[in-house]
View 1 (tube, rainbow over the protein chains, first blue to last red):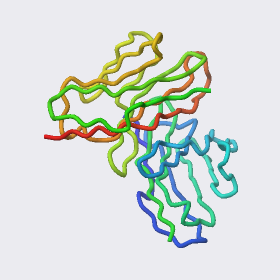
View 2 (cartoon, rainbow over the protein chains, first blue to last red):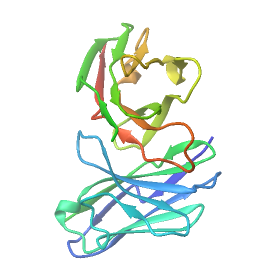
View 3 (spheres, rainbow over the protein chains, first blue to last red):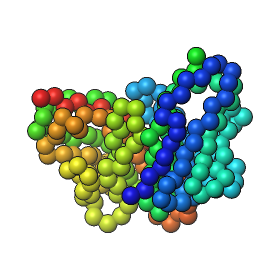
Length: 113
Length: 117
């Protein structure tokens, strides 16, 4: 079946630094990648949608300069949290849309200290 | 705009008992419906989906759901639960039919299923 490999699974960074999260679709081409954020015991909040080779579309209230999304190929999408602050600590999940429907990565737990 | 309501934030149940997790949606267009399961610190795994056709959908791990258009519901059921079914369950909806490309999924707030011995 379809797999989206998401790395890292956990990351701790210092306030003010940037962190890059990577999602690779291993056996399918993800024409669309969705990036979600999930707070403890809450649902998934869509942050942005990206299509390969074009700029991401951000949801209302999501800072595009803070959460940089790159979808350079059909198998790779990255989310960079720039100048991270403690309030950016959260669980980030990507989801690739392709021949197998929506396939989710295993998530990245970001802790900013 | 679409929305999903999962009325029960938590459902406690004993092992081998039946369970139903409720999901209601709101949409002005035709929909595709999904149920996902999430274990702690993991991504989402698809349990089942309704795209078209038979309103009774069977999924993995013995789960099934029934699409009821008149009641705008897509409740998830399992006749006999196991301890290992303890997890968070999310219902999701997206635009169905005639769309090109992938539309975003709108998720409910989730239902925590707690199975005890």
